[in-house]
Image (cartoon, rainbow, N blue to C red; front, top):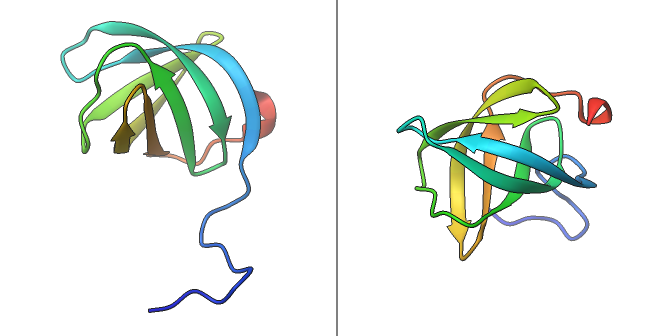
Length: 90
């Protein structure tokens, strides 16, 4: 499968740069910064190592969203939300 130039499979990302807490699969709470977000996914910066495939909770302003980590590169990770998220609320 080849992508056509200009075609993107993911929804547009919104730069949010917002403080958050990641609750990893062990229940540990890790300070984080959400860098960008869409209704389906996110990119986040954390000081602790997350694991690809790990199910996590992300808490922002008291709201918790469930997600799965899809990639990790250094201090950044990206994932998909398990339920659709309205990015305008962040």
